[in-house]
Image (cartoon, rainbow, N blue to C red):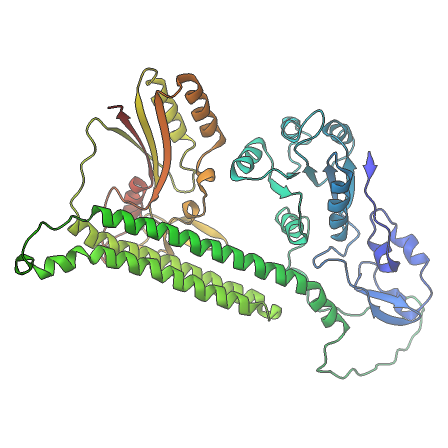
Length: 515
């Protein structure tokens, strides 16, 4: 077993090095009245009777001697060294293993707080090692983070299905490591640390009975601590700004693509007027026919403008780290308002569209099975997967196409964006709902809607039957099967609303025979 170590840089670095005895370390310090400070104060260092600043390597590194332990399993020495140095910068003790077999041998005697596992290794690969860890009750509760160059939503789904908590790329950044450590609670919460530091009694060890009180004048110039804090969080804020810009840009692009597809589909369904004279065409019905298109255009512009405003506000907020918590609360409140506004716009859009467009009958020979999806569950998993399994068992000789379509229902929810939402009580009036929507489903990607068992079932079935049955999966979003009631109705309760939302939150299996 190899041990990743990092040479100490000065006394402050030696104080944080894993395995050092704090009592022995303090014994080598020069005698000074200020050196009676606690050993767990890494921001302060004694030099010749003076108090100077010694910042921690990374913001958020723990200041106590009870360091957590991490195990890195990778056959690449450079990968072990890079990740090990980052983890040591956060105060973690790091052990390394060159193979999965060596890691399993290590775990017989040691129990780390987290394991970073490579995927492609000689002998046992990362997935096999994760399965072995989860099968052993002594190691099943240790969080495993895949540390690999593999990427993609399908790989992430497979890793989570086997028991890994996530995937960390080989091109890892400091922000990725800190995010993982905070999620695994291996670092204290950013807001839990006290922003003020008090100096200990200067005469506790020397036995002096009197101390001179020196008044300190407040200066408007930034001090050493403030400059050190700014230097430490400056790169992190720049990376967060870049990540925020990327996320907002991708979100706006995805929104534009979805709205363009909706507009094209809506325009294709609009009936063409028969040839006639200009005087014979009634003007009012023509305006009514284009009402759904105008409403859809409005629906496309409103979220784009709101997201743009949030993006500008988020960029400006990076200049004031001291008020980050208050701005975070304001952004969460604005997010809830945006989701409510979108739900209202969708409800207004459904009414004219339903009046102006006749219902289209299902294609001849189409057999449709509908399965409801409870709120908070993946659409293509659980009971829906068992229904699909039974349906495929009935189709050994069927020739045609199986269309699997997922839809979203808007539920009456209580809660907030920070702590999460839950189904409201049945007797709660709809006006008391914190949100009418489905934030759980809105946050899922197409790969996350499908469980690993679903992907394996489809792959196995298509290998057995060949190309006689084509299977297609699509997500059509909010297309209610049952119309929602008017929210202005006084006696409308959350239970009544959610019963309708449950019927609209569904998966449809449609069989279409080959022509």
